[in-house]
Amino acid sequence: NSFCTLLAMAQATESGVRVLRCPLCRNEDPAQLDPQYHRDKRRSYAECLRCSMVFVPRWEHIPPSQEKARYDTHQNDAEDEGYRRFLSRTAVPLLTLLARQVLGKPVDEAIDFGSADAAADVTAAESLMATSGGPAPQRGLDFGCGPGPTLSLLLERSPLVEKPVALYDLFYFPDQAALAATYDFVTSTEVIEHLADAGDALDRMWAMVRPGGVLALMTKRVTSKEAFAKWHYKNDETHISFFHERGFKEYLVARWQPHAVHFHFADVVLFVKRPAEPAAATAAAAATRRCVACSPTSTASAAA
Image (cartoon, rainbow, N blue to C red; front, side, top):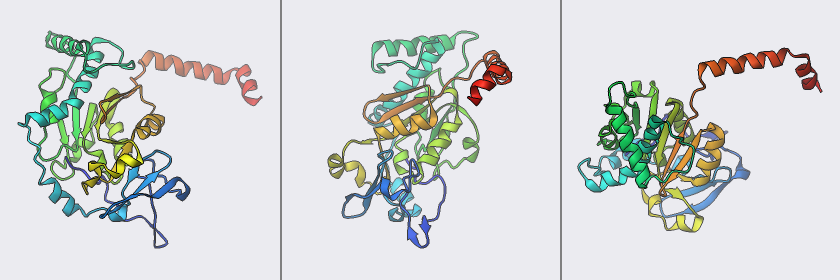
């Protein structure tokens, strides 16, 4: 998979001095950044003390031409059973959440995605989709799909998913129209570790998710400084942004206020957007706010 930079940005400078900036929470406070988290033979790694993101400073990134040359060597074959099994770690929980929504089951409770009950939910929902007048299939986008889209093919096997799944990749499927639409789900597998501006890209993905929809992300996570020093994941020079669980659980949850967040295995996280309020409830809430705002009691309380 690819997608190193969502937006072309000049090297951050201030009065000719390089500015260290967290790619997730955009933190530039030197007191909240550790520029010496780790260093190997090729590059250095900094840590954001606010969101625990570990990242390579922008001025040490390889150029896009080298980045794409590296992606061109990837052997991600849709016919490879091992690769499909790897991507199923995202496909299975995503389909489970879509199935529970079709069945009217809650998605904000703990779910064992590998259980027989979860598989039964998917089977029941897919059967319901096949009935006359059943729910419409869910529209999706695979963001950063790479040169050989595979997750989209896995998802398209299910009646829960509208065909075709939309594709976007900076190098291989640069379809700007795909980024202008909204979706019931957006997936991004083994992509966000390549992002120079991860926070901006994630906000954009989240904005494309419809109310009640799902954003499914796959990336390996930082666990400790000691483990990072021995971690093979950092050795890929196109990997520049390394997420900690705290960045998902604290920073993104606070920023996005999702309906639910689910972690699956050590590298998959799914955010469920809050469903839209029914029109009648929204109108009633607005009327109540107007009444309270006009109430003498309310005015006095506010002034007090």
